[in-house]
Length: 154
Image (cartoon, rainbow, N blue to C red):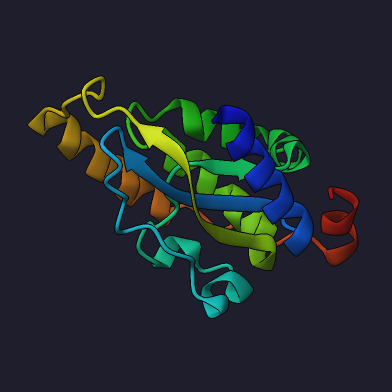
């Protein structure tokens, strides 16, 4: 099942020449996540991911070259490390911004979330997560990669 998911994502990325994808998942009983969706084209074009509700669900996949682009900016690492909650948002928002229109939602279920093993988030941790999200969304957005740079990462 794991190799099938990887093949699905690889084909999805190659066919659409993507740098980033996010998808949908189901729980161990087969109930599918219902809130995951693609970002509107205008959000991608303008790089306005920070102003749009978070819809980048599991699995989140991206080209390693995007991460290397982010690693060049030492400020980002320091920013991510200061959050105890919402670190996925702190990392993935800049990745989405760099990818811009080369990001997409994969509607195929490629991830199974084991709800029995999941953490129950305590109220204080949930509040901390919301505070972190607000701070992360206030950080300056990154510009999408120039087309030639993005193409070289494929």
